[in-house]
Amino acid sequence: MIISGAGLSAESGIKTFRDHDGLWENYDVMQVCSTQGWEADRDLVTSFYNARRKDLEDKEPNDAHIALARLEKKYPNKIYNLTQNVDNLLEKAGCKEVIHLHGTLTDLRCESCDHVWDVGYSSQAEDETCPRCESTEVRHNVVMFGEAAPAYSKIYEAISNSQLLIAIGTSGQVIDIVPIASEFKHSILVNPKREEHMSSFGIHNNYIDEHFEHFLQKGAGEAVNDMMDLIEEFMDA
Ligand SMILES: [Zn+2]
Image (cartoon, rainbow, N blue to C red; front, side, top):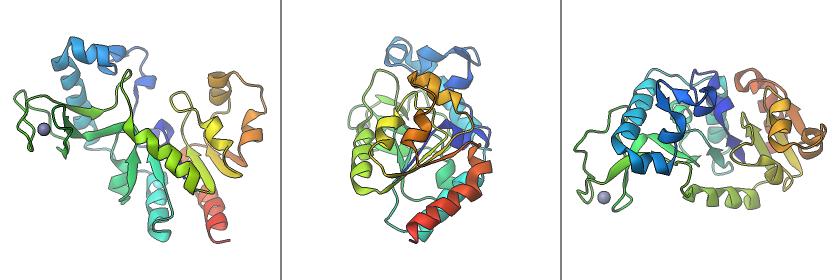
């Protein structure tokens, strides 16, 4: 079970709302990432996601994305590849089976019939309609604060069916990975900062060592070789 967060894509130049101190290119972060903001001004939120989609176009996967694609190929049907990232860099690296826990930037979604379709890097038009039911109630496909994330059910499915947890570049601030890690005998945490985790949980200093079998204190790209060695050693045992 792989679960990744912003740290996986950081080295590819993808920023997240956490990198922005309340303001993102003059957009109020809470407004564009919350259901209240969406209800208050749909045009503003749509223009924000249109800009994010455009930003994504020239971004390239890094060594860590490419390594995860290699794993999927080497161990078909044996890997749950869950990500909190809404970018498409895992797919660009060649992954076919990515579970996007917080939605996808390159898709739009129909609020009437729930149909999701790929728009690539294009902007959502003012008169955008659903290709399936022709509704004009169309929105971006990113999960906002204040709404359900249906893909979270996959977390539980992955926990029950996996023997090794690999957490990459996730601070644990949105999805608490400690209780997830406690379900596993074998686990790897890849994160450049130790403090980030401690501060988010406020637990004593040793908690990473207690809950994770291996801690690679590095950025995702930098940790790739060590991470792959550990994974392959486990999978081939
Ligand atoms: Zn529809």
